[in-house]
Image (cartoon, rainbow, N blue to C red):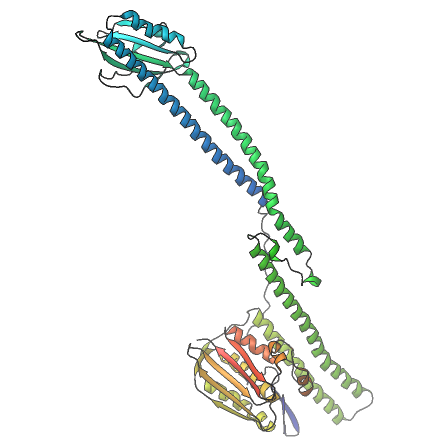
Length: 509
């Protein structure tokens, strides 16, 4: 929108199309220094997931099977030890019965001590009976050279039952279990006998050592087989990821419409597939918007440039008078202004998207700010025969320059589409949740419903608007949306053809 004011033989052009402000600098224009873009750091290779899974599976198999082997080994050793203790205690019990029932029958006692012992081949045991003077009464052959009497633990009493044998390692490294106990003699016989019983554990020790060694060999092969199985399982489990990778590799800039289809994958990979498809949707939408934006930008730039080139060619086609050259320069100046405003608006939008604009919030009297914007447009509104009114009171927290720019853009847009005799209402009111809403309502032609979803897109305008207001660039509403995004607020547009349009700016508390 251009307001031409005649005076002193010159023309001044006051332009308010697509985002011009009352004479005040915005905080967006304070810094234009280019930012250095950091290069992405190259991360070290994290290794193969298959290798990690194989290692973890193998380690878990080693730990579990190793713990089970140690537990079973301990159980077997404990059971064998308890059985040996019970065997020795049982032999002491038998010898006590013989001493009590036949204290003078040494042949019977010797048969128990020598002949039965000699009958055992793999797990031999030895018996020795001493009197109360520690003199040997009977003794298993070779016991004296293998297990001396001094090696035995203290004997339990004649009425006590021995429970735990003592371990003793003799010559040549052979292991023995030793148990000793006193025994009474028959009725009427004074004195007692000391019974010493020993069992050779070397065979069981060798057996357990072989068992432990075999368990080690089994553990090695179990871990080896577990590693092989883990590789196969991990590769099979990673196959969906490879398929997702191949599917992603098939997607190019020309095929952004393709999707991975989350329904095909296991539930563990479904969130990844969903997130990837959502990313593709956003990329497709952004790519489509970028393509449309590039086409619109080329169209918008081509029009004023062609106009400037045409006017220049016509002016140079023959010799002109100074007044004719002046008219060409004045016409070109308007096109230059349009190009300058377009570039400024694009720079503002670019900085807003890259978070270069710093918001300097302060508490504003919204009614006074609306009145200041109205006063600035008073001459334009009077020229067009449009009445602009302000109403309401409220305080809000916003950047003053950006607030005035947003309202200015909406009012400029409303003036463009409100016919002579129409009205525009600027109002402000607080909401129950603490936010503040600013309304810009006009009685213009309104906007068709099919245009509302894209009305805030850059360069988007309905076709009639392009022909009626060629001085606009289609960036004013896009700037309003960027300003509200910077304030973490919202902008909504309500319109019906023939009933006017209402724009609502909502500033959070």
